Length: 94
Image (cartoon, rainbow, N blue to C red):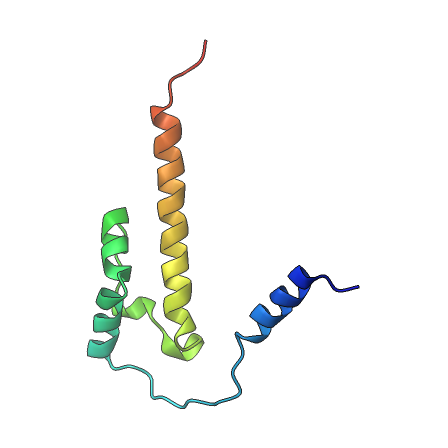
């Protein structure tokens, strides 16, 4: 038996896939720099003290998913930094 919640999950997953094909050229170096800046990736990397260069974005390895993966890695790193800072500032119990 499929519950209403299970159907929503399936519909949500199915909605990720679109049969309309879109063909784009890979962004140029200047467009890549703009994308890194406009998506907040550069600011997040700077906040973490991580240097992101145009060489870190290899479009042929996954298209726009390259940006998604980079943003995800930086977001997880920020989360880890936050957890570590929270632990460091927590009072010690005796």
